[in-house]
Image 1 (cartoon, rainbow, N blue to C red):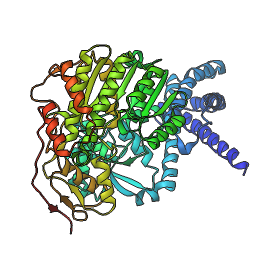
Image 2: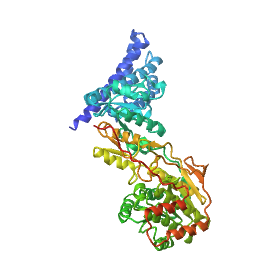
Image 3: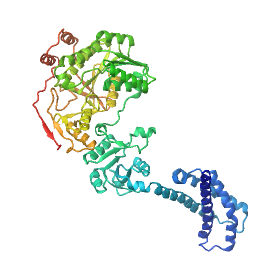
Length: 620
C-alpha cells in the first residue's frame, strides 16, 4: 500500500519528462518545417539532457507534484504556467553556457514552452475528465433531471458541485438575460427565460427546479419560487447570500422552498451605529418577552451588547424557553427573567425602579381576534389597555427614557375588540406622552410569518392531516412580514422616534389568503385535488382586508424606506382620566357593554357583522 503514492509520483514525473522530450523535439521540427538539418539535430540531442534537468527541477520547485491529477483545477494550471514561464529564461541561460555549435535557435526556446504548456495542462485535465467519468458518469446519468433557475456565478458553482452528485442531473438553465440564451455553462444549455419554466420542465421531463439567485432582489427570487409552485414543479433553493459569504455552507446545500420564500421580503436595513448608541451598554426591558415578537426583540437586542436584558413575561414556560435559548446562544448576555403581569402596577413599577432600564419595548398583548371577540372582551381591554397604561405611567414615574409600544394594523379603523383595544392603547400612550417624562412611540405592523396562532402554522397542521384547509373568505387579504424584520423595524423606530410618534411599517403588497393556502398545498407536494379548501365565512370581528392608516391620519416619509410616520390627533390628559375611571370599575361588564363602551373611546371602531359562508373548493 505504501508503494502506491510513490508509483503515482513517479508516473507523473515520467509523464512530464516525456512531455519535455517530445516538445523539445517537436519545437525543432516546427522550426525547420519537419526537416531538421543534421548540425541542428546534433545540437538538439546534446542540449536535451540540460533542458530536461532544468525544466524538471523548476517543476519541482513550483510544486507541480503536490497536486492530485484527479482534482486538477485552475490553481494547478496557474502553477504550470508559472513553472513553464520561468523555464524560458532558464533555457536561454543553459543554451548560452553550453556553447553549442550551432546554438539553440531562439524560436525553439519560445515554441517549446508553449507546446509543453498545452501538453502538460491538457494531460492533467484529460486525466481528471476520464477519472470523473469513471467515478461519477454512471451516477450522474441516473440522477433526477433538474432545471437550474439563474445562469450566473452561483449557478456555475452549483453545476460544478452537482457534477459529482448521484441525486441530481442538471438538464437545463433558465435566465431572464436574453444575452445568455442558447449559450452553455459547463456544458449545460441556457434554454430561455424563467417565465418558460413550465414549458421547459415538460420538454426536459424535469419535475424539480433549483433557484440559484441568492444575490438577486427578493422580488426576483419570489417570482421564481411562485412560478415553480404554480407549475407544480418541486422547488428548491440555494442558501442565502449571507450564508454563502460566511462560508458556513456551500451552494450545493440546497433546501426546499418554503412559504417564507413566497411571502418574505428583502433584508431590512437598520442604522447600526445609531442602534449601538441606543442599546449598547444599556439595560433594556421587553414585556411579553416570551411571545413571537417579544422573544425576537430580545434576540435582536442581544446583537447590540446591552448591559442586560430584562425579560418580563406572564407565562412561566415561555420565560423558561427564552432563558434556555439565551444560555445556549447568547451566554455572554445577562438576561434577567422576571415572571409578572403587566396589569400588576406594583410588580411593574418595582421592576422598573430596581432594574432602571433606559428603554422599554412593550410587546405584551392579547392578539387573537376571534378569541378576544366573545367571552374575553373585558380581559382584552384589561390586558391590552390597562396593561399598557400601567407600563406607560410606571415608565414615566421611574424616569425611563423611552417606551416603544408594539401595535398592529388592526388598530386602524378597527372592526373587532382586539383592534379597538390596541387603538385605545395607542391613545393611552399618546395621552401619557403628552404629560412628559418619557418619550413614548408606537409601531404598527401587519401579520408576521409563523407567529404563534397565526395562519401559516394552522395551514401547515391542516395540510399534514390531509385537509381540509379552512379559509374564512375567498377574497380575504393580509399583509405579511417576517418576525426578524418586524423586530428590527421596531428597534429602528425606537431609535428614530421623538415621542408621540406612530410609525407605520411599509408592508408591501397584501397577500390573498386563498392563494397562500393553494401555494402551501402545492409546496407540500399535494394538489388541490388531493386537499380541499373550505371557506368557512368571516369570523366575528374579522375584516376582509387590513389597513395601515386611519382615514384621518396622514403619513410622512422618514429617512428609513420601510418606515413612515402617521400623525394622529392629539389626545388630552383629561380624556385619560375618564378612561381610567372606566378601566377601574370593580366588575366584569358583559361583552355587549364592552363593545358599546369601546365605541365611545375609539370613535373609529365599527363592529363587523358577517353572514355565514361555507363553500368547498377542490378535493375529491
